[in-house]
Image (cartoon, rainbow, N blue to C red; front, side, top):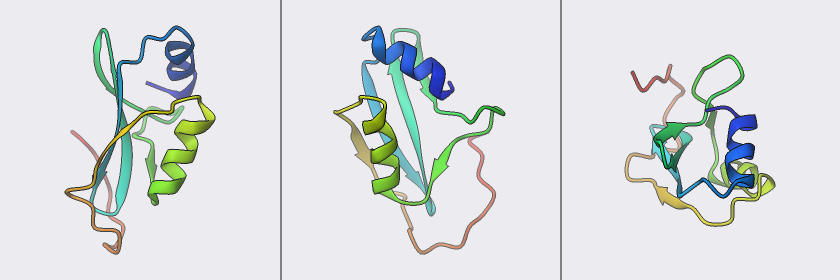
Length: 87
């Protein structure tokens, strides 16, 4: 799901839950909608990631999302960057 789709779903009140999830040193966003869970992707279809929790939260706030859940159990903020994929 890209930013444009997420905005449309937010405007339609179709977003049920928003999660910021950590893996290694990166954070990514998962969104629950009536059709299931989706990860936020870049325009090129890659998983969109953030390096800091505040940057991720600011991105969501700009889209009008005010309530999120954060899972940082697997967060290692000082871990060196690695290629990242959910597949």
